[in-house]
Length: 512
Image (cartoon, rainbow, N blue to C red; front, side, top):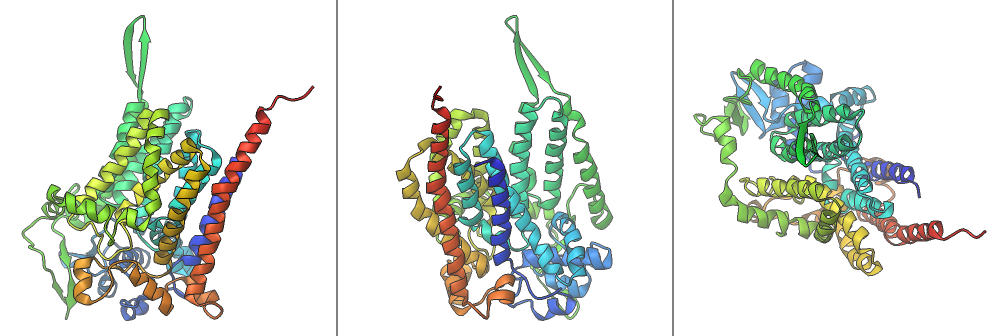
């Protein structure tokens, strides 16, 4: 089957399945809705990261400012900051600006919130396409590249964050596309400056989307720098030349950096210190702010204090194997991806080192974080970029082993991972850490999601709007689950056989 077929299929499948689980309501949530329904589990705004970013979008669109007036500020709690008599979102403004056109278009048809929530889904689909394209660049068979893309989309907890307003899929897109741009930068000599511009643009946008992106994208920039050297041996002499393109393609980074600095200066009085002296507000009562922070501690010291090497052992356990957030507990198929690292290294040494460094940096950065749980969350949301890269290695594993038995052994892992991922996407991401769950008497694993499934509680717009009167939520989950399992089984077992048969027919000598 042609590559275009796989790409179109990925696009349509992703949009369709994400659409079935997209969290939304019947209409445009205005200020009245925001104030009355903050705690509603079946409402789209389950957690403060969603509310805070959407609140800033409302402020920009409706009030033409980055300041949050009182009724919108309450929506952002507890991720709310206070500076010189004004409220601000503590998140960088990148996502709120990015979704602004979707908000304005959605508002025209009274579905602004649903339009905004579709943006991460679009990036999630693009991420699956990039996984496929990167694997094809490494000459992995199309069927294996396709199944790896499907596994990332629907067999990891990244699904839960593709149907609501979080930054993780956008960050993942910047990482994957940056890696892909450098691959293209190396190959195409006539227009390689375009790929250089895109790499710098990615890095600049990443900083405005989420502060840790400055570190998470750093291996991509190192990869870009090393790819900018031309090394030749002329008459036994080593000649090293740096492509000047890396210098003049920095323009997008400088432009966006200037605008972001001006934003900080305009609202917080400093070009470089992000949100200087911004006090984090935990509540607002009778017009007075309540904060549990020591206001003498600068935000810079506060942020740096969140990362501590002493946290790493507990962070690694929490993010990788615990039943609270463990990657291999929620998506055990990712463990088999480790088998593809060696085959990838044999094929492309430098690229494999960069990919492994991206995973390592992602894992160790958030292991050192004081909150590796990511607050109330479903699965290890901080590791979504690593899930995408591990999916690339999984494609390598299938391609290098090429064994029916290996695919058969991996299939139960896929089934389990899909079941858990769909459970989270269709019900809730409000899963507390163990230390908070036990005093509250609630579950801290996906058992909590099962209870929501049984009671029919979901924020799925499609289910609530179209299917609620015809199917129970459990039946709805089962229909989607069986469809995905059938789809994956076809591309895991049938498609490789058809590919091999076609390759065999092409390789046979033609009779004369």
